[in-house]
Length: 458
Image (cartoon, rainbow, N blue to C red; front, side, top):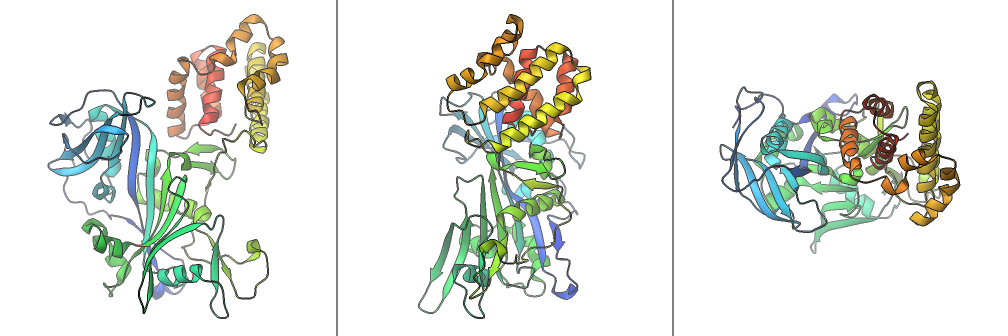
């Protein structure tokens, strides 16, 4: 494998408090990173692939394919990707459900590699060598390890207080948002102990965990590469248990919005490339999924009026926030905002467009609003816009034919949109590129529909 690195194995972050000697420290890292891919070349046990890029250490890797354990029951074949007997990734191929694309594949970065600073290089190089096209992140877990909260509260004490009703001298806590939770612990005649708490179901787009990581490593599977970095947490007391806050995020939970302009985008692999980026993302998710209010005994105020308890470090000024884009046809406010935003873009670029282009974009704006505002059937949607369609000539009606919105040409533009989304491009950039490519109006309309599916706020 590559030579040992002197760079940190995780990013260390402390609370900004004047009591320097008592400042709690938090360590941040990805603990799970899995991507959905399309495999464009055959792969089988015993194959060898040469790395495409020179590693940061001046070495070109040679990846071997070995038989691996099952990663997902959705696939028939499971392999390990190794280099010099070192596990780098777990690969699943040959999907069982016919509904999945036949080239579908799942690639999971090995846990040990995730705690090295150049893990993303190997993920990209493996994909290039094996001809795997990354389509999206299917799951990522981001975590913070610590021994006490920023108010010096012990994690176990917090869990017990959260589980109890407030009484005099012993406050309790309520979580901002849903307070449905699952807890796992153990009880004896003399004590009551908790191992972990979970907020959200495992099917939720974001599932939040608070658990005793030291106990998990003792009881289940030891991971020395995690324990080795804990010396900065424990100080002189190496017997202290380390706890972990973890956000398990699926593909639907990766949408963020820019606070300044409400632009919505999906996180992609480069957004997790450094421990500093993981730290920043952790605070963004913690702002929504790990905020608690303190409840004093006898306090009769409404829950939203209870004070926020400061458990985590003060994050730097955040530019983004976590959002959930509703797919419900009953939601109307978001669609109206998108409609108005698209209309303003049309006005801003009106001098650059031909009359036919203006008509097309105006139609698309109306199409979005009609399609996503309380409509329950395609027939009802067509009736809603029938009058507007009749005002267009035959050629224009063909260009924006609703029945052709998601046919074979959509796949090309989906890839183009994903490329723009990966590098944080704007809608204006996409429209400009479409105009430069001189594509048909029908395809531009397809692009706009796909943009909406990807969470672009027009």
